[in-house]
Length: 522
Image (tube, rainbow, N blue to C red; front, side, top):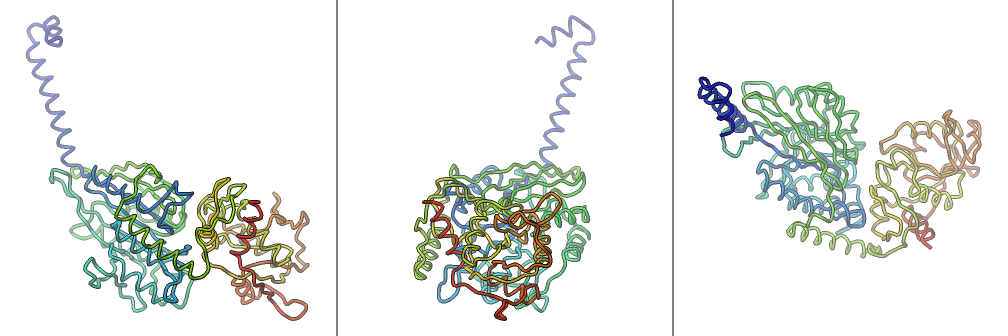
């Protein structure tokens, strides 16, 4: 009424026409909005990667597969087009996978597959640790136990044929090189075709015979197949398991990809190179923080819009009862197996007087009190000049806070492989080269950790007890027995006075950690 009065006051002749035109314009605008909504398809992705523990971590405050299952249901209630993606590393290494021995075999990820089957993962691609931890028979058996879709575009069996898994009825099916699925809007008036493929970094092992295709060749093939032809996909998603630098290369080389869902780096990140290239998303390991990505595709214009946020998985999210029951079943199986080996997983060793920072993002970039606790303990046992340990050997990927109770299972999940200790003799020039190479591997598992009597100054000079390492001197170095064997085969160590190359000790690295934590907690 106020608009009509105003129009009459200003122009009594044109007021009716003006009002009519105004309402007509408004009607057209509303129709356009409605049409735009009808043309838009909404897809939600909950992304996971590098999940080693079925139970929550950080004292129960973060992560937990049963909580992820609840979150999936919550997202599905909001959008029926919701999918969980998991980009690799579920078999191990982990405390239960490596150390729980049943019928003379480690669990080798059996519990992880069972729990994730219950959750209902929508798309999974391999990590390198699916292949490099356990026997070929165990690896192939895990494939056959998996009932959620596995996609691998660059791994196949020794003959080049796809590996096989089981469907929901137990029948054998080929692992997919890629998949295409369709998504519609609630009205069913718009439909989008989504293509997904998966690529994984190579693993370091020769006895498991597989056919590996490099990522560039594999992605070239997948992009051509999924985006070419008479019926190309509307959205192309790459699931990857590489360090982020490789993911950046993939995004830059293949602008046809719309979204990269990665793994391997163990920490959540979003990387955008530039407009027109796929953004890269990764979540924290052990489902501590997961990315939720909403994709909105306009079928009338062909434009894709992305929105995202990081979702913490905390005790504020209730456990899904069905998944929790499966978790508890396998936790009991695993802990009972550990007890058969005289390991008491729930035994409290001590309360830590300082934070035990074993996050991969920390220990793969710098020394922490936790890593130096282990390294200094090793050095005390082997009585060496210094001790070394590659960061990838420590798998805790968690932080136990000040005053936190450290259990025997915490030790096992920190050190899934219970190696003996050894000492070797090494020329100073070789030691310096080893330290340089390890220091250059920031962010990766080959980043080298060392005792606190080793430092590196701003000029890049390595110091031992505040004195430069002499390239012509010989040093005793504490290491894992397995690493000592590798150094020997690489001819990087020299003989002791008695003619031996390696001196081995009965004390294991787990015992070192137990002793050091117990001592620190007094």
